[in-house]
Image (cartoon, rainbow, N blue to C red; front, side, top):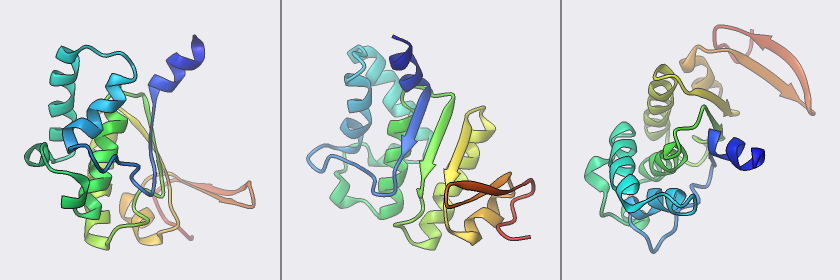
Length: 155
């Protein structure tokens, strides 16, 4: 259906990672492909590729409890990228991690964007917004109050 097609074209990353604690990094990313009926061959090709993109090739057999917050978020990003979405929505993706890890996540999101995926990021972190230097749409009480290019939280 059209809805299923659209779901596969949009990847979502949440603030709280949503990782399965009893599965390895590889398995956490693979689950997104398994539910879409991907073949074992596709899974074995795609998962290492997206883990490499987010800088986690060396964590394939680790479990979430063995990862830092930033690494967990990068696993979430890899999982969201498994379907090669046109749009990646990052909802407070840096909200539960330390500033250094947040910077790493932002670098990954910028890399993904430079490869052609549109990245929509919701954040309250002024530092992150200013660092990204991208279009900023401020929403308050459900209404757009400003729409500016150049990545400044407040002008």
